[in-house]
Image (cartoon, rainbow, N blue to C red):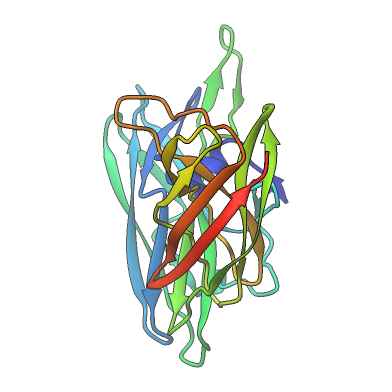
Length: 263
């Protein structure tokens, strides 16, 4: 099992998937896929790879299974997990050469068997650079730069079922941070969305938003609440205790919250 940082975290978050290093220079969009499909019916998707190197770029493309650790690091594995759906996935080709500045629309397809019960199919499409990097003179060595594009495919009526099961205040860099414990009793990955009203110990009123992290089926994950920065200004410093009231969302579900975070 291979643990990739920081490129794995870039793929898992909502940031543009990009790695630019010696021997590997690519932008990939979108950084993740969240799709719905029906058992027995193929679904084709397209990701775009833009090569920004000065010479032709050569890439290897393949699938991986992955897990998300408690510290939100993505761990990729080439071995099939017990419930892997990668055998349902067909990719366009395994190696690709792209001219400088060019873009390539790369196709892949998911076809769950007709008897597949409602569930989520999760995998990653890995894009790995094959070109060596020049170090000194004529010496070169292969670069292991790669990007994992995460795919979540909900089959049938698979859906998340999120619940806020607790709150806590944690210290990050010597500063308090409001955190929600969020459980998922559904059969598909969910995310918290929306804004709630916050008031700190000094009476400062702010909007609070959950960080964009996935909560996988059967898991409980800590989701931080962060103050929303006013346009053109840094996020305000909050003094705890911090009160928070309102409703967050997960799809069509609303999750009410009325609590206080201790110092």
